[in-house]
Length: 371
Image (cartoon, rainbow, N blue to C red; front, side):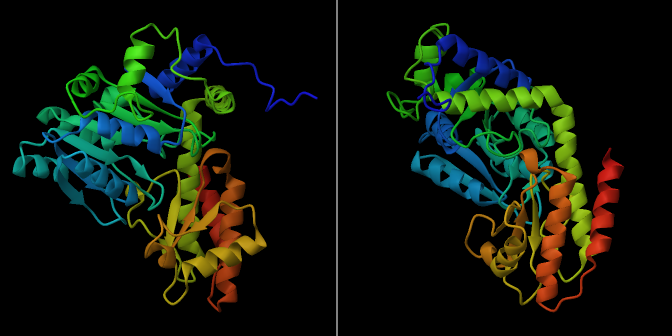
């Protein structure tokens, strides 16, 4: 008996290359794009280990838990790391980046997360990219959560290493990711004696054995399911139109924020300013005296399929933060409406006064104002 998920023909090198080309078009980049068959942590770590070493002076921007992880990797590579941490309820500014360069002109590497889904903020990459280019540093960007939810333009922004994943706004699988690599980044890797070789973390292996050979022979057997799923979600984005997809995410974020502000009950946006809030997910601060984990669990009891979660990368935030994940196929008016309704019901059970009908009206008005 045949099975569509099991009896798959091997993926050819030409087919693999064609999917890379579609991802490159999604990023509007002329840089090399390498698809890595693993969750996005694979190219995120591989790109840092390939380009950083004892001589590197890295400015590591921390606006959430992933920025903290990148700093750990950079130190492990022997780099000198200058952490620029901002409160998780806000975003970093280009002025803060410029100030860091002024104080440390030796910086030659900048690591930044575009959108931190865990904490719900997004950073102004276009403005930051101008500063990084001015000082000539290599620019590494985690765009895993932002791709599909907001513009991601590595060439325009001067990003040398741009990592994306399919599992959030692209609406695809978690087991496949990609990275665009500039010529400067390849040169940095080639000159780095610590860059991984003959390793699953090695981007240089892909360059030398795949790209430089004209993409004729793959390094290993492709994971057909993940590759075909990546291709399918790119096709879906192409069919809907990337601008339409990003507008839908922006509408979902605006509607969720407006609805929460109208809901009451002490629930409020975690990210203080709307312009700092990521379109991929809206994080909320639970009312004083109410555990976020309990509130989210009760909301999910009434609507178990909703994309709600407590916490932002675990730790202390788990007690105070609720995250509404309106990304991919969940970036819809219905998801926003049902999330507000379920959270409102959970707050009412805690004896708090809420206006669910008013919240839904505010969300619908906000959604309509973005169209």
